[in-house]
Length: 409
Image (cartoon, rainbow, N blue to C red; front, top):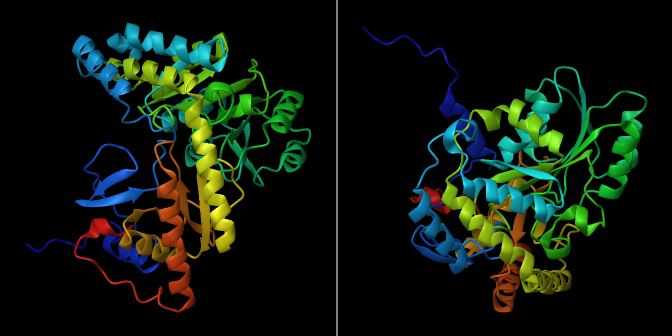
């Protein structure tokens, strides 16, 4: 008998629509350790799209700590933290992270996405008002929606607009990125802290892109602004960016952490990360705190790039962090820029809707302390050639399909 028509939507047609709109995403295969000199689909590339801001993902001391941890603890944790997966290595890392951030306690999560889901769903429920920056990371926005909270979004980094939005209504929680992942700018944390205090609300700061980069010893956005931790401020940080390993944590008061242990479903129902990773992260954390030269080098590289970009008249966003967005506008233009850089052996991702708002597609250029001045100059030279090609009308030829799908975003 012939098969009846499939009742589900035509997935192929929807995929074709993404392709037509220059919004289709394709993976690339990395065949080298995480470092600026990458090997992508078998081709050497200079990478400017990693979040390994301090160059620790391939650090020999961190690698050795992971190897020692695996020799002692094995490969997997075997169970959730609340069953039998919480090791002495996890406990030591949580204590180290608490001391590093200045909070009474810290709690490990498998990813930043799960940490944000866990915090917001544990503290806010159906109908509770949650206010968030319009450009927050997807995990913060999704968390409020999944918690069935009354989600209100305020204009980007606009503290007065947030104050007006709150009005006299009871607000349970305010959430913001510390450093915005696609724009590289900072949230106005001093003003947000005051607003949260006046409203009697929690303030959740996702500092995935600030920890390690900003503040004394890399303590992040709060320290950058001279703000001390307090009982109503919650810090979420990830370990797979500046720290070079994997995972995430939430830092806060004793009662907050105990509440998350009891109520955060992504914590309760997830297998603990490997103890060997915790061993490696403790070593990485020490390097982050001690080696200020990595942050100094980053600042110098960023300044060199921004000076060169200004001379070229490149439309950069206003960012002093390792995230340097080069604004293209349309998805087609961002994709064309990315492909033109790739043709010159440079890897920079085109960021397109829905990751960023319509009309704000960009190249998200990111820097690492492992980059060199020569790397920056090579990137600037490649961008110079792209500008010249665009002005001559040669850049926007029709994009041809390639036999190796991994060579296109």
